[in-house]
Image (cartoon, rainbow over all chains, first blue to last red; front, side, top):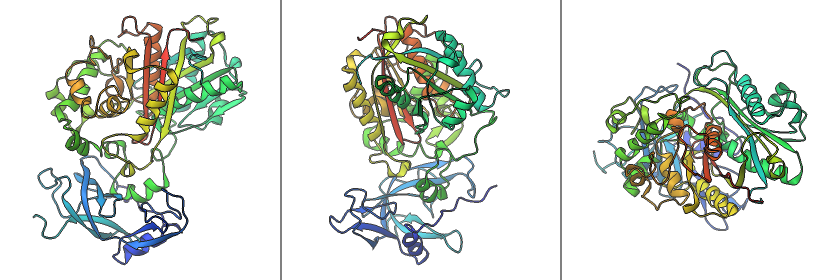
Length: 137
Length: 381
């Protein structure tokens, strides 16, 4: 089986991966309007401003949608959950929901989630999500 | 674009489809191109415009021995061919070429001479989606559907009915991969692929090619085939990351592309006699019906379940059986266009009697992009 896909770190994404390695989920926000956006880039995709700041996300999100993947994928043992989560800051991110069985009984749309990090290499810790503490089983 | 200024005069699929292990991907382009030129009595020497996707345009130009004055390599996934039709109309109207050839070929099943590439590679997709095991289309294209079901009431049975109804259409087509009737129970008991999507809700993977020849309408009557006029078209792109789709219950690219196509054609939905909506997966015709405006939000699933798109229904949809039952090489858009052309020529094995306007709507990537083409057999100029 091929190895799991790993991101390539570029100058525009260094802050994101450095943050993840330090256990911090970092987003970007434009200064003129406060637009928060993802994935990383050197300007705001809503207003075009290059005047941007890196912010620390709250680490809270809701389960927006998902599938339970029964196909093979490099580095994964099916079935596994592929999800899209919506962060409190309004942006969406891809995720695997960790710490739950891959079943519709264990997953409910809009269930509260919290960020965790999955170390894939010395360089890469991948933001992941798990059910929020105290919010269900 | 001027409605009807350009016509499709040649259209053909590859000589064989399905499992074609003796032809490479590039040869499938060539086989379809030669067939389409034969169809309209032209030769390669007549072609001075070329558009293709999924293969370097220059590769196809060299392989066919062309000397084009217009080249378009727009590659936004399976709807690229709808987009090429729109671009070809603009190029022909502007005089950039006189005879435009659009080719597609893909060895999706046999993988003969297939280019080693990620499926619609995107830097952001590779960095922020692929590490989550999000690779093949069934793990990407399917992601919005549970949100769609929660927000609009779409049911699993309605999704399954899409496959059932399209199989009814496929039964008319000798070249369809699967022609035997299926039931909702068959669909819902087929192998699980990407829960809630089961095997029969996912498209085939076949080897196939297709090509179109377009020219200005004033030349169109000189050909042996019945001209099929391009009355309108639209295109858009949204995101190469399905996770970044603006709204999981509606495709922005579909809405933009569809609106442009209807406006440029000067038609309303009531004018449409025949409809193709790219169905890599069973949810796409439902998004298409709603986003193109044929039905209201949440009405796509019930519309299909009530039988309106079936043989004999008031809006015949995916009359070749679609990507679910006909053919799907990886970029299906060319085959939706081929069926629209057959319908407008009056020669489809599943012919809609008296059809005058056909709409072919394509999606690219995993909700990445869209292209919509309005075709008619009535001269507009």
